[in-house]
Image (cartoon, rainbow, N blue to C red; front, side, top):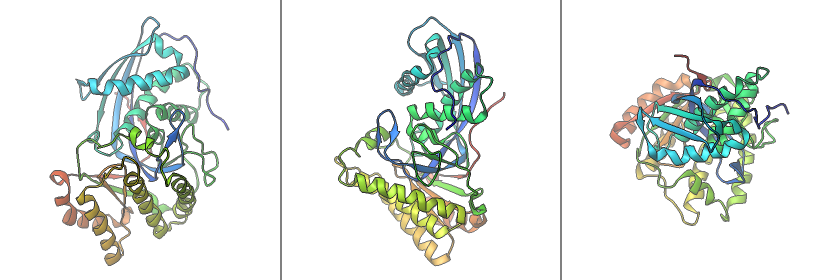
Length: 358
């Protein structure tokens, strides 16, 4: 398998400024449970989103050797709450990029959506930061291809947030070794190249903000609950089966199988949380009401709407672009009252991260 060297040990000291925009992603097959250093217990596949973005700029300036050193602003304000996660990330990636210890990083970041609201802000945030760091490293690897840089960015992003590995390119990314996707592996996500059915071009994702508060349990704690979980092995086997089924559905345009797998995955994720020790109820009453209404509407109208959820109360409603008008009429009519201050986000499948040139 061709991949860039994951260790970059040139003693480079230089000023460098870059800015990247990375999207969030929504997993169809869920990653839940990890081992080692941010390695997944099962493979996952996700849609790369288009409008839910983190934009991050980093200025690298030389300093004396030491540990990774940075300052951080979110929305132009100092945000010390984010420091431990960034510090941990920089310490984890330093073995793969020792030159970090010779630089101060001035990091500035902003989101196009509310952070800590179940829209995987850590995925887009860590992906954007990793892309900035790889862009700096790339200056000293003129022979690197775009794919090399993407692999390295995914590899590094994974060390900040597992799902961030899948926020590099589009329209879909696979992370974790799956027989269904040759070249898939645990170290970084890949964008598989089968001929996806055109029905999935510009697939829509309307995100209902049922609860805008921070998550009740961190992703790290949630993954930890899979250790010794009574249903863990069955869950991992289910994920492998669903990777196979979803690949077939995504290439054949089989919406019935796509819907069945996607909804089963969302419900399994929440079932694992409900049956862990301690257990967590991450759905709100409005979440459950929305899921039932989506199924009732699909049965009554034949419109191929389906739902998925991350580890929180908010609901992603997925549907083909050709069904956007009836889907949005239904969403606005039925769900505005279920959402916090009537808030929802309209998004769609996108092409991945990009460098921002001021």
